[in-house]
Length: 331
Ligand SMILES: Nc1nc2c(ncn2[C@@H]2O[C@H](COP(=O)(O)OP(=O)(O)OP(=O)(O)O)[C@@H](O)[C@H]2O)c(=O)[nH]1
Image (tube, rainbow, N blue to C red; front, top):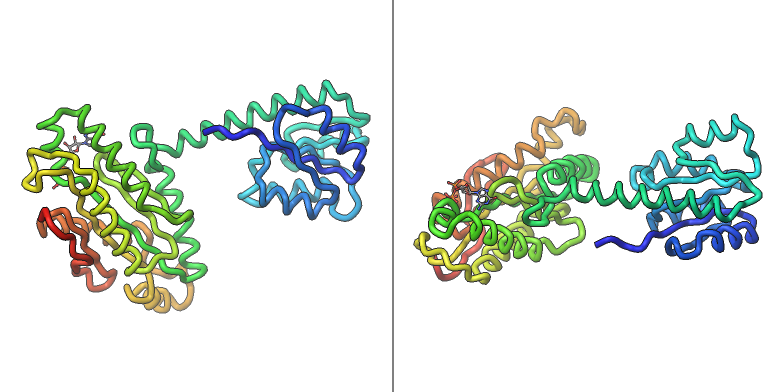
């Protein structure tokens, strides 16, 4: 859902803040800072949709604020408009070279400020919408494969840096071909959407990510989660899908079920010893996040072999699947 735009005004002159606020009233929620360091903090915390930034301020200058924000991946996409009395060409060039989208001269002309802010807010919100769409699976609303790959790559870097546990679940709807054949593809799509909704409800922590991997396969990314935690989520997923109680006349189980393969990179799963063997140098590590996904795939295969509607965990080194949690009934 689209949120109301937020605009940060940064100027050490309070009367300028007031004039700018008046000029852009009605275009979004406005908040302000009168110093550069407070502006950086607010931008990181609030992620405004646009910043009107005074170029000359005591302490950290507006140019320096812009440089800091553009170097930080969490704030680099926030458009910055410089507002300054120094409108010489070389100053303007310098500001634009730092990544600002526009340059407005003082004294402030309210109609010009409002028009430019409107344009840049429109572009920012449109870009946000496109980015969201590019990361979302159109049918289920879950993260798509691109978002999944990006998340895994980012989290994997964090695992190597912090040596925090990391787990992946790979899951697949049981006998889904038969479901499509029996009920038709439209009902198949409805089933995928319902299962996806159940999965989203199981990935509860803010850092968890539920994604559609492709077809009727899904992946749950569980950062900072050990093998025990991953196995608990796997069990919860199986129970949640069973609780949907979607009839599946072409399955021996009578209802739609899923099988889950779990893999973890943590102290118990041999992950840390792999890191140590890489002579404390992560680039030397002969193991990658995609290999962890292969381990989860092996575990999923084992769950399918064992009769479906269940989860299996596979350790990195031993590569022998173990049953991770009893799933009662229907099996
Ligand atoms: N309706 C629908 N079906 C899809 C979609 N994506 C993949 N499928 C179907 O999912 C089915 C997957 O079949 P299989 O890979 O043989 O797996 P399965 O029948 O679930 O069998 P097991 O995984 O062994 O339990 C195929 O029939 C695909 O056509 C989709 O977006 N919508």
